[in-house]
Amino acid sequence: MRSARQSRGFTLVEMLGAMTIVGVAGLAATTVATRAVADVRDASTAWSLHQDTAAALDRIVQEVRAVAKDATTGGPAVSLLSATQITLASGVGIRFIDATGSTPGRIDLTSGGTTSTLLSNVTSMSVSVLSGTGTALPLPLSTALAAATARRITITLSATRNGVTETLRTSIYLRSLAGS
Image (cartoon, rainbow, N blue to C red; front, side, top):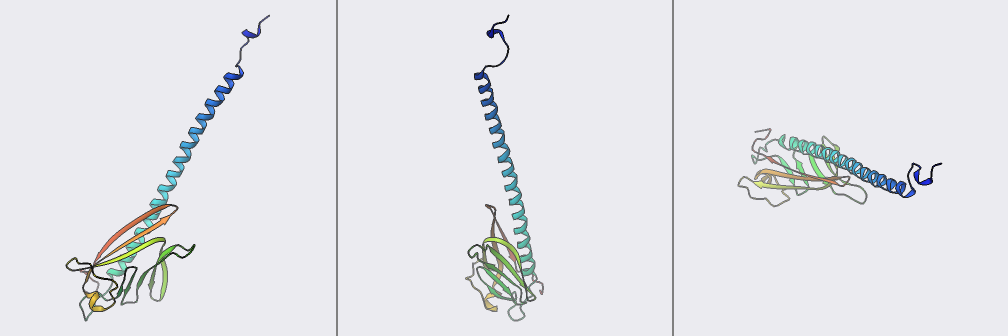
């Protein structure tokens, strides 16, 4: 007959030790996998936000570059340049609508009497205007003569989505206008 000491198997302490090691390894693997999924989600959000912000800036640049030359002043036919709004004499308007309550900020484009949203979740938009000598012009510029001195418009957009913020800036040189 065999004694109890000679029987094969694991003791309770060995089983508890093995289960603890497997549990810790499983927890570590879950943590790594969860972090990897979150990183992929953040990267995807950042890429999407960058693409949307860049597309909005491209559309703004397209509209501003299409502005005709003012026959009187020789400058761009601009009705208003302010820190958050660009209105062209053709009736095209680009405006930052600030966030209110639970409604996120946005950039609206008005063209031909129709207003559409270019970009939502916008946290800020700033417009600065430089003269031909590189001097910053005080805003708002609302007269044709003041707008005639504008040679470069710099637009900065910041948007946030799911905790990811993207800020893009572009400069529009008004040397070559559509009507020139």
